[in-house]
Image (cartoon, rainbow, N blue to C red; front, side, top):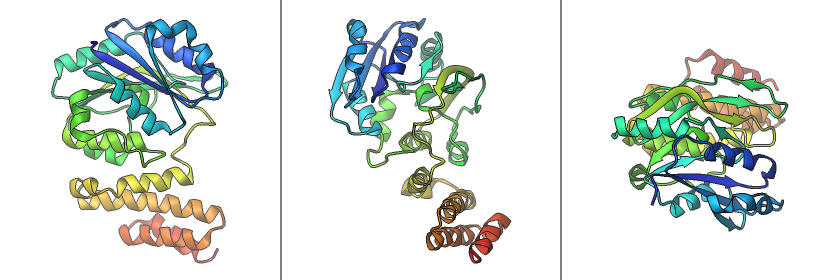
Length: 284
């Protein structure tokens, strides 16, 4: 048995995954296991991992996507805490130590996350990204997601209560899980950048049209309708319908764009941007 299970899903990330692994092996906290879920890689990921095989548990599966891969890792985990790490990200050495100590001081929390730094493929480094908040943060998270997946550590008890990643979501699956956790548990946020994520131009972006449509699917889930004050819920939903509508218009899909902008206006008719973009759509 161990205290922390580190879950690393990967798919064709041979050039990054050893950096992620080395950052785990360099942790000052040592009571952990490493679980690699290879989601059908067609490169030589398995060969690259051979020197590390005594330090990890490796599972290969046919390609299923990120949510099923993370869930498989959680199902294989033996630890009391689940630490998530994407294979193109990495940690600073004291990351796990700070989080485990955080749970000892705040055992009521369901999740502890950290602030992040970021690096882009050209090597440009940004030290501080979005700060976060601690406590009962459902409303704050609903307004904007401030938790990166690779910064999160979650208790097994919490996941038993709220469930795992929604495998029907190809994007925003982590945001959905954070919101479910925040509904049932306080969350602690360490505002030190102990996690570094890669701004990968080939990665998933929730700023894409597909990403925003999936985010709408998350925001319209029943548990949020029941938990968020009506005015805030309508405002946030309207904002997303507006963005989706503009995406459709920019792609020349006028009727789809107008439909989403009309919905945004109905949800938040006093917002001048909603009125402006819907009016502009009528002349396109």
